Image 1: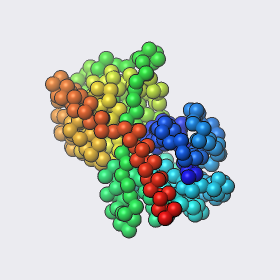
Image 2: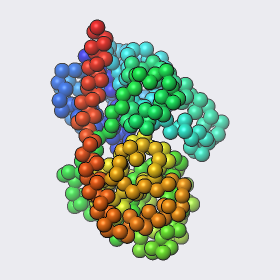
Image 3: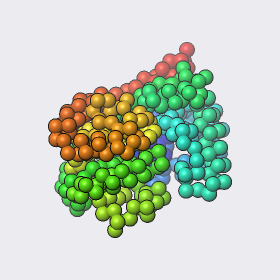
Length: 372
């Protein structure tokens, strides 16, 4: 079977969809030598060496653009694919061959508003309308829909009840930090005692709440800092303007860091905080647990489903509850020890190899139905 995989996000931020795409492809390459794969990646992406049956195809089509909708499907047809796997909702409207699509979450449908974008409001409204059309078309036409949690599955079913039978939940894995040593990242200095957040600064991440409440709490805990790691964009720039370093000395915005520095941050942090209101999966939570770091998380989205009893939870809009739980998690060694032990057990449930095998089984299921 000839299978195409949309890998245009691969090597863009090494977060979220990027990490998901790369891990699935690399793990498929470890055991599938029968199928032929066409991996469609950007011209500037740094892609590791792939097995002989994986053919790298360089493309210039950016996501969410006109070329993606018009010329991208024309190129795909040339490869005579039996099945195409789009790793995000942005399936070209003109693509009419069999495909599988991964819908990671429906966060934009949850929290519509111009605050979600730095675009002109009119342009954002037009782009949002296109998003809804493309998403609806993708879920309606897909042979199968992959999503990454039961939380996201219920969301998809709520908005698109007619396609519930096409949905398969395949959990993401956990990326190992093995082989990454602190020596690689010595040049980066972290505070002596700090809590950590890793991820983007989109509004649903609830970072305004986190910064406001951590600042209030820190007035009685002057030696405790908060480190935020994530790609510097307009949303992070806005946060840094509202919380300038000369006034909020306990906040440290690092921007993106390499894997070695990230793993070191997880290991050195006293606590990892996930304040998100809507989360389709929440990979950083598992990464923190894998590094032996206690987790404090909002009781919201897919986080309780993924973290289970390996996290201490707070009500996402409750200032008193957050500060109380923060004090417990930051200051109580026994609580952190219990959370670390539970976290270690929890991460054992998630594996990129298992996820790749489930993807392979889904591709094979399509092949069997097609041949029948």
